[in-house]
Image 1: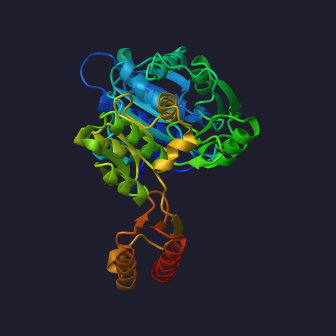
Image 2: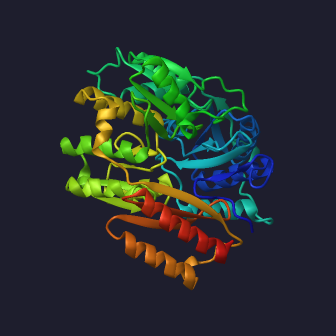
Image 3: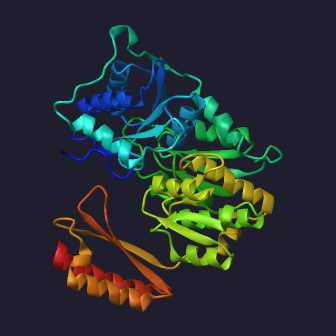
Length: 449
């Protein structure tokens, strides 16, 4: 049996397993069977980004869900966090996003939210996989008179815009602010400019002309230098670069300097700490976040809790521990009092609120965190063996950890989607980073490549 779900839903190149229309139809049947409980009508919200292949998978999923007896509400191109919100708001049983996030247009993906707006557990994903990939599965489909219907929801952008604006203090306005906004020709291209314009900002719009093939193409959060150049050229106060499905944000200050998720988390955590609004003085981040963020939280009398890579693991830890702020270095930020998943536009509004309330520019705000030099390299491997069982690599890893104790760290992890070992080193000085990264890559290539 092949693997269906990765670290964030199902993902791959369109028309190649697992992103085949027949697989998508079976995913709809399987999810419909799992989430359809009782005699009442059941609902699923389906949204997508702007990829050409979105039409294929939207139709296939709709067929599967309707055949399973669920009513389908199609909202068209909308950000991933909007689907989480609409699923909750419309009292749906499940929400589906058709998107491959920051990947190029030829890829696509399918990810789910439950009725509360949270991503599915590993156990539910495994049950969907079992049903989809079992050749002899017997579908529990309803009688013909109980098949589902499909509806288009035309006002979903307006609902999401109002929801986001309600997270921004009523007494504040963006009047007089100039914002560069790069939507990556993705799912935020319609809603994002309207949000900031309705709050009073002058918006310089980039990446708002999707054609099905240009999503994430040399724009958005993967290429923040595009927004940075426009910030400098237009004299903007701030720049925001989103990814294709709108769940992550990279910010640019007024000097054209890029802030990653760690710096954004530090700014937001510091603001909440000063207001005594950060539960247990705790921030949740993944193993990829810079050690400087951990030291920053300790110096503030708080702590950083780390999780595996993936925003759903961040959210799971937040829910379990009663925390309200978490995120990833890549730009996913979760404000659990407002949303159940990463939301780039919500993050941008939170940053703007802090700028207005403190009277500080983004450049001034980011001075509270000076990230340690960090570098990541990929080593292609023949197979994903337990590297701790390779004596030479284990010895090299322990030597690096001993040398960097208290002044840096090393992280080795396998990619969830490709045969790659990711090696990350961060330390007080670039020389230390380079020294140990070169050594670990050399040893890994010798015994794993």
